[in-house]
Length: 138
Ligand SMILES: [Zn+2]
Image (tube, rainbow, N blue to C red; front, side, top):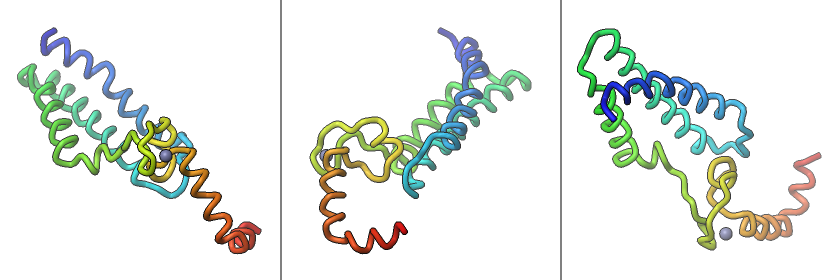
C-alpha cells in the first residue's frame, strides 16, 4: 500500500461515493421533516468530494503524493471528532429502552426510538388526541 495506490482509489471511487450519497438524499424515503438526518449525508458527501478534488489537483499539478491521504485524515478526523454532532449525529440504540435500532430507525425516521417504543408512544398519543387527529386528516 502506497500513496499512489491510495490516490488511485480516491480518483476511482470517491466521486461515485459523493454522487451516491447525494442520490440517497434525493431518492431515499426520509420520513417526517427531520432534516437533521439528511444534512449529515450531504456534509459527508462534500468531504468525499473535497478529497476527490485534492486527488485530482495532486495529479494535475504534480503535488506531493501524500497530500490527498493527509487531507482525507485531517478532514474526516476533525469533522467526526470536533464536529461530530453535525457530521455523525446518528445513534444506534433506542433512546427509550436502549435496544439496538434498525437501520431505518437510525437513518430515515425522526428521532432515535425503536419500533416497539414508537408503537407504544403512538397508542398513547392516539388515545389522548383522537378527535384532533381525525379532524386533521380529513
Ligand atoms: Zn425502544
